[in-house]
Length: 210
Image (cartoon, rainbow, N blue to C red; front, side, top):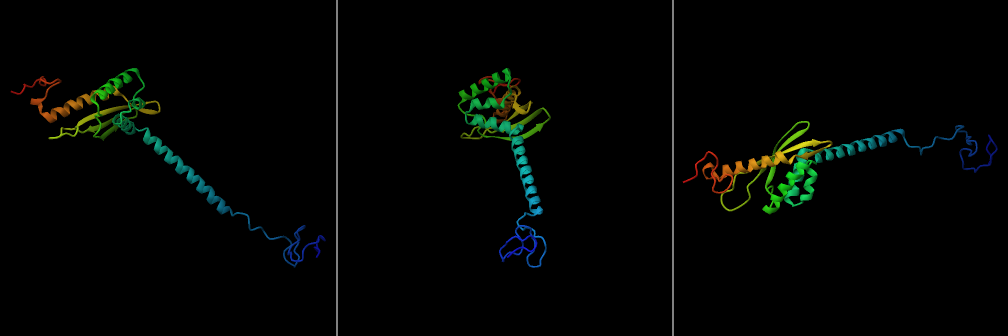
């Protein structure tokens, strides 16, 4: 059959002319709208979902980076490296200065001679933080041995901000460790039986036991 509008030869089963779009059976003069075009609501929903996914990924990334860079995370990483004997990794968590590296080297030499980590039984029990400095209190339990257990020692890690990262300042931290260990020994043994600082020498101001 031929289109009455343009004369184009078209199959008889067609309802519209494929050339000019005229209706062949008294219908509308224009072809029906296509039903394959996606709805704008669907496109908007997809766009909103994509934006929400990006926001969630950014939040998770920020949280993980913030936790890893926190003073508490730095202390935990330092302690875990000491437990496993990864001395080279400890440098990553300490201030990048000559005196800090020297103090760390002294601590690590003592650690090698001792043959075990002083942090085998330790946990963070307190924290205080300002904009540039954080103090992390770590309780170190006495080594497990037969008989009564010794008193735990309290070591305060001084952590300072260096640019965009937190780093341990080993000088005040080591001083705190020495003081905490001495105090724990005094609580465990009692003042009258404390050898300070070497065996056979009583604590200052205290009489030696009879």
